[in-house]
Length: 127
Length: 123
Image (cartoon, rainbow over all chains, first blue to last red; front, side, top):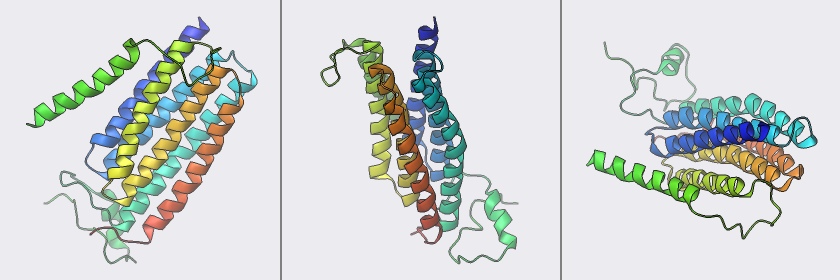
């Protein structure tokens, strides 16, 4: 019974991984790709690791390491995604043409920007 | 035309996954005494398919940020692959490899993001 639940969790995790990679291939923009793939792949890999925890029979050394890896992934993956998207926006990667709003550029308009080539006026809602 | 391309892509992807699930397993590259042999080998094939899609984005990415995101995602996929290998062989140090890989990928992503911030890529 526990093995069946673990296999079902690993299958759900594989589906999330494939869909996240498909989003990484198909979507039009850096920010859209990051939005789709980071969440889906992190959740899918956490599901695979929890399935590993169940399949290895509870708190054996392998199950404990799997739980540790889940905590580590949940703590670090959003931080890395946030840093990459912030760096891309500050480095001047443009948004997709169909984007309707860019809150970060609006927030940075008031400050004096150290980078003269930023895209502060790109992608805002026209009045 | 757009609908046709969408249908061709969806058919190819679903067909590959169905082939992986339906075809019989020959685990020539893994040892014989595996736990849950068929399930594990099919899971590894599906993860390799996802990794190939990520590698396509690494090779074809228009900007540098795309490649950095794709390499980050590739590291997280490797953690899952190591976990499945650990289940298959019953040895626990495969997950150690996964944790170390995730740590290196995290530090590398932070460093590359800091590198992205100082330069301009909008040509």
